[in-house]
Image (cartoon, rainbow, N blue to C red):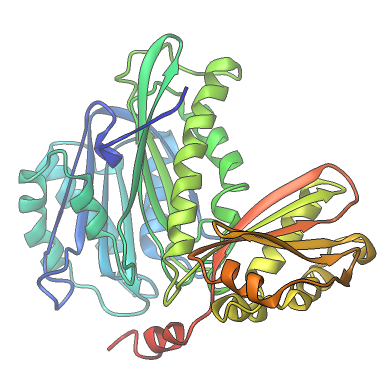
Length: 404
């Protein structure tokens, strides 16, 4: 049974964290360097953006954890370390400096970076910040969470307790993500820690399967960023028999991982740049899961749907339109659409055609902060959920002067 607990990435045994201001950001009140550390060697797995333009830290991390092992995660914010001639050098230097401070191997470091793309990055502030970062290690998941934020307005962290092989295990995560969020892995930065003993091969298998239903089902603005990464460290200190094959224990771990990722998905989508509402599109009745996913993502990605939700306008025709161009094999004459929130549920389309409904009640439902767009395709058992947000004036304001 899953139980939500406190602690974020420090909930699991043997993990500590910290976040400091090192000077990458001009604003001294904002932390810009974060660290997560495991006292024991951990199995490691990660997934990365599919953008052909990739930040240097992704290349370095991929090389570092090729052996499936890691001890620490370091991430700076304020500068994405992307498209820099010396980007690889900076990322490797960061790993080496941290390794010296922690007395670990530089190859056991996951390095990440987020912020403006293409800005020169000096190693000096990172080098100066690492001693304080290491010295302040403790149960500070919240500080690490602050250290990876860019345009985020809310911290994103969660932890759960679960049982594997009779042993109590813990898993927790932190995330940053507010803009440049779109499917095709990974759509933001997410760091997950667990004390469950899992082999690196099974950890990679669990993560790769999970992201298909979690982080690949988010879209805020249609832009897939260059530095996106999700990494998981499992140090085994819970004492369970190591999970090295499929079975009940692996299923229990996957369920716990999905609880973390789904929670963070919703937090990221709700905190989209300028957003006022979380949108959740639930598609049922598809001929298969692939069709359901295609339709759900098309609806969530539609700028017109997002704008209508901002205006609390029950313009269901925009949803049908998004389904129609999704590229999925759908019989539009079987499509039903409804809206739901804490204020109730209202059907607006039946069998691909409009039905009478109260615009006043619909508006009341759509004025809430969390909106469900319910789509039934009437063609099978396939289902999927995608997450997004409304499109507001503030999105343009934020991104019009992002560098200044």
